[in-house]
Image (cartoon, rainbow, N blue to C red; front, top):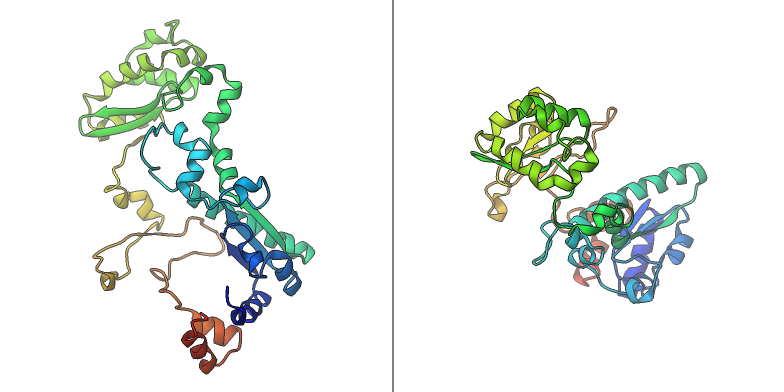
Length: 324
C-alpha cells in the first residue's frame, strides 16, 4: 500500500467491500492517500473501523503513539487493579476486548447503513475500553471503603479462592440468603448470623479476612468435588479453580462445541491444538469452525481474480513485482 502502483488495486477492492478494518498509527493511511475521506468518496457505503491504542481523536501526544496491550493495560490502571506489581500482563485483555468491541461497532454500523444507506468511520481506542472495564478504579471515587484498600487486595466478603485437599475452589455469597445458607447449611455456624461483625453485608466488608479464615477451616478438609457438591446442594454459587492444562477437558465447553480439535497441525510440528468454537450461538444460523486458519495469501485467487476481475497473468505479475 506504500507503492503508488498498488493503490488502484486497493481502491478497486474498497469499492467492492462492506468493511475495512485497520490498526495503524494515526495518519498512516492518510499519508498513503488512503484515509477515510478518500475512501468514502470511492465507496460511501464503506464501514471503516480503526482500532488504535489511544483513539483517532484526542491529544496528539497520545493518538500518535504506537501502543501494544501491555502499554494500554498499564495506562488504564488495569495492571494495578489486578494487583500485578511486577511482570507483564497475564492475558492480552486490551487486544482481545478491542477486537470484540470492533465487531459490535461494525454490526451497529451495518445496521445503520441498512436504514440510511450511509457508511461511517468507527474510532475505537483500546485505552477507552480498558478504562471502561476498570470498575475497581471507578469504585474508588464513590465507595469510601474502596479508597482505603490496595487495589490488589480482597474487597468483597466471601468472594475468593479457597484451598481444598486437591486444589482450589471459588465461592461467593452476594445475597443475604446465600450467606445465610452458607452459615446454616455448610459451616454449621448459625450463631454468626447474629454476630455484630457479620449480621449485614456492609459490616462484613470490614471483616473479609475473618470470614475467609472460617471458610478455609471448612474447605481444607474436603476435596474440590466434595466441597462443590455441598455448595451446589444449597444453591451457593461456586466453581473449581481450573488449571490451564485442565480447561480443554471442561465438559460444558465440550458440550457447547467450544473445543474444536479435529484439525491436523502436523505440518507445523504440532501434535494437537484446540481452537475455540463460535462464541455467539444463534438460533437461526449455526456457526462452525471450517478450517484451522488460512495460510498467508490463501484467498488471493478468490479476491483478485473472482472478485476484482484480474487475470491469472496479472496476479502473477503482482506477485513477481511484490505488489502483493
